[in-house]
Amino acid sequence: MAWLGFTMPSALILIAFAYGVGEVDDVANSEWLHGLKLAVVAVVALAVWSMAGSLWTDRRRVTLGIAAAVFMLLTPGALGQIAVIVIGGVAGVLIFRDISSPDDDAKSKDSSGSKKLALVVLAAFFVLLIALPLIADSTGREEIDVFENFYRSGSLVFGGGHVVLPLLQAETVGSGYIDNDQFVAGYGATQAVPGPLFTFASYLGAAMGDDGLFGQKWIAGLIALGAIFLPSFLLVWGVLPFWTRLSSSNRVRGAVAGVNAAVVGLLLSALYNPIWTGSVLNAEDFGLVMVLFGLLAIWKLPPWSVVIIAAAGGYVLELI
Image 1 (cartoon, rainbow, N blue to C red):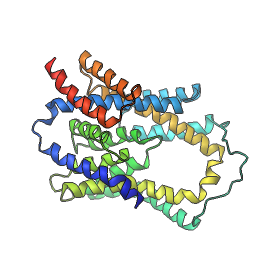
Image 2: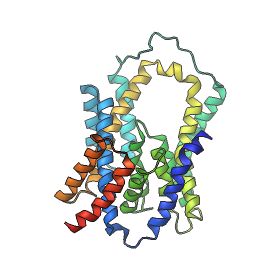
Image 3: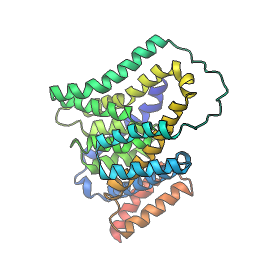
Image 4: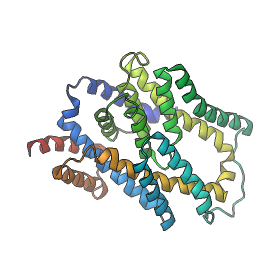
């Protein structure tokens, strides 16, 4: 019930937005869409700035994050993103052995919950992660492929909701389900609604819901929403009984630190490509991005208001 209350308002708004975008002629050349693209640049830049400030706390983390960003720029795609996360976790175990925790002296006492049931749930998480792509490849069904894409994206997000951006971009735009203009328009709209960033999946599902995929746009949107959140349900349920013990392990803390440092680099690479390269086309665009970034970072305006200003700014740029 908490999840429904937290996610459904924004999910329904974004599904309705997907219906509206589908009715707009020549959406790629719309002035408001160009403004939304520039808003996304400012929002993601602020996310990188904030995450780097809290997760790149020493030279080792900064070095690992920059290496991850360079790797992603040289090796784009979903497989590269998975490799960055895995390598970041392994490197964290090796590099951050001396990481400390404020509750190191606390007794390692597991949380309440059935451990046997938790292990079954964890097994289900990994079975789905491995089996879904195999089933999608063997059957050739687009519905299974779409569900698997969102499930895998939800499984691999660490360090903040914005990190899902490059994963979803690769799985939707890269797979040819929607074009980049539709993707960016939905991401900009997601900044203007309440709720978690993962509700962006409901827009994407609805936007790719044509040609009989899941029958209806709104059904496709709800299925995509459920698919991207399902891994978090399984992981929380499966890990909770063991979390206190795990969180006291130097190796686990080191792996988390390594992954978090790497995903900042992953998001930094996404800020350049496809966000910057596909949005900032001239000096006027860069000027509007700086204004929007200042409104977010310095004046602390809410993202929804900055999105509206950005859409209006797109019209102004067209007149210059």
